[in-house]
Image 1 (tube, rainbow, N blue to C red):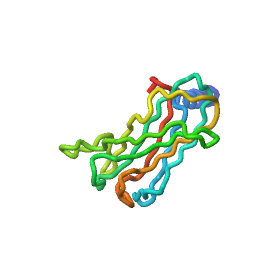
Image 2: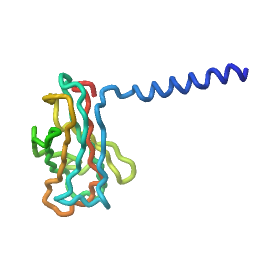
Image 3: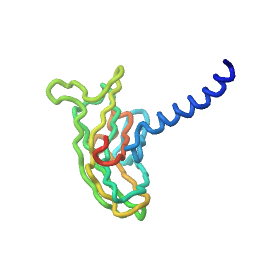
Length: 163
């Protein structure tokens, strides 16, 4: 019996590793930027470098926002700057991310205790001009310095339409 167990254990571990690593085949990159002491300063820029291997494959980019119930607004304005490896600006836009219902104040996303995580689409169906390295920079644009109640901002780059 011990012999069978000795043979099955490595195979089971290999199968489990393959199962867990293959669960998110759409993901190209996923990163987050922790905001020190929950105070996001106007001049603090969250930088997210990522690599595109297949420029023929369109991608969707989403924000991942972690906020607390101490955040005083129902929305969050951020500006993104998408740059190529030479630092050339490919696109930029101001986004209004709704973190809570404006009438009831009920937070959107998933929460545990006083922390809420929300995923929101930022750029849909983007095509990159070539294989290589890119950077998405994100800044808060709420004009409150520092902006309290935002714990982290992140991005997810995934194959378009596969999320």
